[in-house]
Structure formats: structure tokens, C-alpha cells
Image 1 (spheres, rainbow, N blue to C red):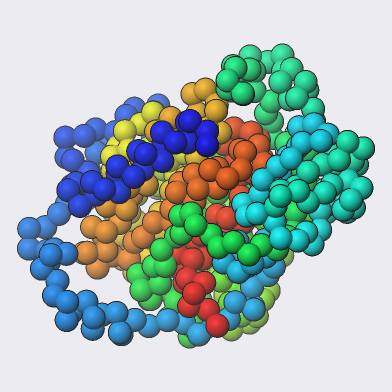
Image 2: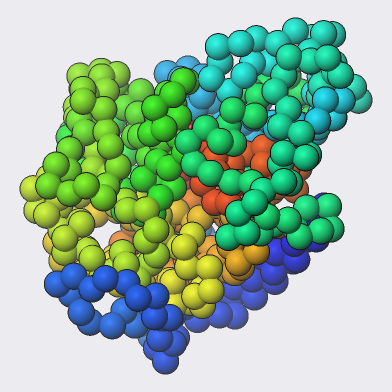
Length: 461
């Protein structure tokens, strides 16, 4: 295992062990100054979530109360068969579809998430070329080996490491090198997609189902009522490096769209995309609605901005979220910030996210909140993989306090998911730019993790 990942996993374990002894959002902790543009609201983002003394603690909850609560959980009537292939959960079942992997040289052998039992297909990233078993690749001890004369693209170590630009640097095989990186197809042209079967069960981190938290939202969807979902995040939720945003096959939507479309598929809804025509800094959207059914409409707003951190999100709420809440309302706000706050104290990042929630509640008191903890950047990169991993535990503490106050709030733990995946795969296998952006495979992990948090695959027929 990569030594950087080992260190971070140990830190995560320590955070989990000490959670019960921590208090969220110390009032004396002031968020780091990230030079964010301040628009309309200029109050320093320092407000913590306030803990009321009369709140019932976990220790005061009786076993009888807990049992009664567990037996009265309401769940929607949905079927996994209504989901598209790419939204079938990778961490359940015995088939993985289009897992990406990147070979450096001919003759290399690579592990996938699971030991392979049988290969269904190996294609190029765009899905336009299918490679042949026994000629282009072979299955060897549960791993995929590219043959010496394979048609599978291999970048070669020489090209991967011979980078003139010293702006970004990465540790590779114990030595510091200039980083091969870039947006669009620079990485994905060297990745191939593998569909395969396996018998081993997933033994890594698994996202909790938080369906009880989102009962109000799910009941509305079950009843066919119109709802509005707003995404407010950074370049990942903007859609950076998704093939749809990059304009090439297979044209897979961003994880924000995938998640929304999955809800439409499950509940037979139409998704209406709101075009933010007055601004040029937010994500492009399809020109037509996504129609899975006509029982109701999900209004989709994506107000994410590349490069933003949590402080930017708090300071720019009046221009980037408030107008859309006023026009369309908000049933679910997905906050996906923190990936760019590499050196900010985790509690400060949580304070900033808490301020977003506090400022939204007067505008839309019935809003539910889903906080999306970031995927980790390239663990071998210099200056990018710092301490974003510590945010997840702070977000969970904050969400639990809001939930205790009757405000629906939970965390989709993509930090833990990404670390578990990087235990098994090289970062170059799953990235769109080799620094911090997801490729289509990781975007599916994002969307599947959010659906698991909102509904839970185990609750689908």
C-alpha cells in the first residue's frame, strides 16, 4: 500500500475513534483566509453549530425508544432494475462495469478493485474499440495483463515521466518527477474500461444509508410532487473531466446529473435543467429535459464553481444560490466543497459549510442537506494531498448536530470511498487529470455513494 495512503487511513481511524469525545465547531476557531471573493455578505465565516444543553444525548436514548424508531422507518417503493447500468452499485453484486485502468508499458499487469473471475469486455475509454482476450490481454492470477503486442494504448514510463513543466511534481517509485497531468482527454485516452465478474465481496469502506434523514424528500418523490435539487460545489460537482463536459464519447454526465437522473429513473420523473444564462462560471447543461417518466419534475440547478473552497461557498451564497431558491425553492441542497481547502483546518471548513446551511434555512426552512466529503487528490502529488481527509469526520459531527435539531442533514463519505479504492488501485487508473478531478468511473462512484446515502441500495427491490 502507498505509504501516503497508509498515513491518511491511520488518521481517519483516529478520527473515528475520537468522534464521541469531540465537540463540533469550537467558537474560537476562525477559518483560514483563502482570499475568497466576498459578494454581498461580508460577515467572517466563523459561526459554529450551537449545541443546546437540553438536547437529548445518545446516552439518554433508551433501548425501547431506539427499537421503536427502527421499526417505524418509512422507505420508498423503488426497484434497482429501474436504474441504468452505470448506476448499478459497484460495491454490491458480482459484476463491475467499465472499471478504468491505465497501463504504462506493454507487458504490465494491473489489479482491479476485485480479483477477476472472468472478463466480459475490455474497451478503450470511449467504448469505440473492443480488445481481444489472448491477443491484447490475458487474465493472470485475477489480474489483467497487457500483452507485448497489444493494441491497448500504453503511454510508456518514459513519456509519463518525461514532463518538461515543473509546475506540479509527483512522487513515482520513490523519486520526485514532474507530473503528467491535464484536463480533457490527456489521461483518459490512455485508460481502458474493463467489465468483469468476481466472487470476492467488498471488504472496504461502505457508505451508510441515511434514508430516514431524507424521509420528507423521499415521500414527496413517492407521491409525485415536484422537487428542486441544488448542487453547490467546486470543479468536481461542476463536472470537470466527465466525458460529457469534455465533449467526447461516451458522453457520461457529471456525477451531479447522474445522481439526479437516478432519482428520476427510480421515481419516474422528468428532470428540468435550469440554465444559468446570466453567469459563465457554472456548469453547462443539456438543452433538453431528461425524461424518465411524467409523475413529477425534478428541477436541477448546478451552481458549482471550479476552484472554490468552503469559504467561497459561504461568502457567495447570495449570488450563487439565493436567486434560485427564491425562484424554484429547494428540497435538497448538496454541498460539495472542501477539496480545494487542502491546508485549511478541518473544523474551519466545517464552520464554513455550517454557515451555508444557516443562511439557507431562513430562505427555505424545509430544505434537506447532503454534505459531500471530497474525494482525495493524487496521494503522490506535492501540495495537493494534504489534510482534506480530516474534513469528513468534522462534517459528520456537524450533520449529527443539525439532525439532532430536526434539520435533515447527512454526509456522503467520498473521502473514505476514495481512500478505500486507492488501497486497491493506482490513482492514475481513476482520475481525469492526474491531480484532483474524477474520470467517468470515479464519477459513478460519487453518484452511487450519494444514492446509497439518500435511499440505500439495500432498500431497493
